[in-house]
Amino acid sequence: MDTNVVGRHMDITDAIRKHAEQKVSKLDKYADLIISNEFTVGKIAEGKELFWAELLVSVRSHPEIVAKAQGHDVYVLIDEAIAKAGRQLHDFKEKIKLEKR
Picture 1 (cartoon, rainbow, N blue to C red):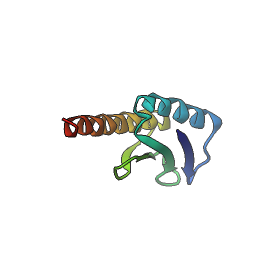
Picture 2: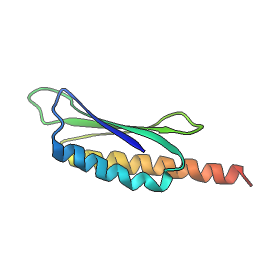
Picture 3: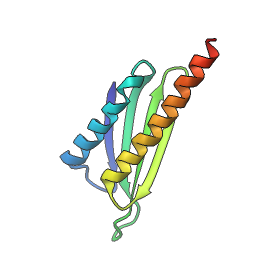
Picture 4: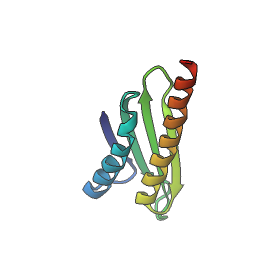
């Protein structure tokens, strides 16, 4: 599973990159569905400590799954986006199971 971490209007430190990649590895239980991940983290406005995070998960036989979060702590935003994407992947996998019946 390929993971790309990108920053918009801010620099991505090694700690942020490592945290994002570590959290994305929690989605490995859906590895049979996932093609790649792109994590984008950005700053909303200069002078304010307000950030956003977006996780795009490319999935086999389905449009991209998008999970967004906004707030003041980048690490918490990464965790929130992973939780949202995990929920969406779980729902998609359950839908596939029900269709096979």
